[in-house]
Length: 275
Ligand code: THG
Image 1 (cartoon, rainbow, N blue to C red):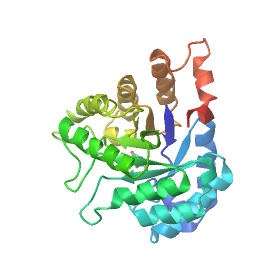
Image 2: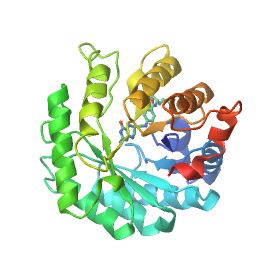
Image 3: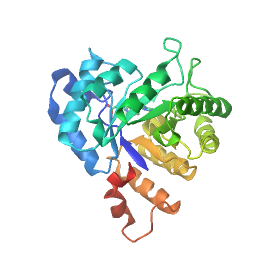
Image 4: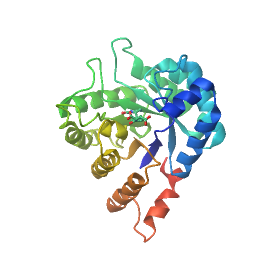
């Protein structure tokens, strides 16, 4: 599992305040704690409140990468914000550019921009199964958009091993949305058959449980199910120990990690090998 640590995100009040005050301490601490917990990448998301998102992502990138050697996952739906982050990012560690839809009305070429930036920096991209019409609410449209993403990436010289497809998980408590987690599992099955090698599959797991009373339980149960369908990455709370234990156990049961009596400990010490 390529674990992308979610916590350096301006959606959280401590990070939002750190960005506003340019106070590095909370960001440095989160970078260190998430790295120790086994993050393969640190997600860097300025949130929506930052006055100048380009300035904010530069500061977050410099602060996080100065504290740890973990590669970064630059997270914005705006190519200009990603571009600003890349200007100061040490891409020799590897980098993930997260997250572009197939296309959007205001920017039909948005995917091309992410692919070009990833090609130039030797990085990978996370592409959402989302298009001008928004997030599809069924399996077929998710799969059709994924096929278009894979084709376009191949045309632009990005092989599927540098492509992460995100089938987009949304809160399960939204009326009418309860069939979506199961739809996503069916979509993963089909997306993995589209190319050889297949693309990676990732998702913003914590979206699923937003507003529910059993967040960690819902997150870890679905992640085990997704891993059994071949999901090999996720943006997660790596500081949630029961969640990381489930990842290690699910991967061991899928024969991706060898069983030993200390398989949980072994899993945590191997983050660097999972990039
Ligand atoms: N796909 C991709 N990237 C993503 C997402 C995705 N990046 C952002 C997000 N979704 C994944 N990261 C988070 C981070 C936090 C939460 C959910 C997803 C979260 N936050 C608390 C909440 O909203 O309840 C914040 C509250 C607090 O301050 O504690 O749940 O889907 N590719």
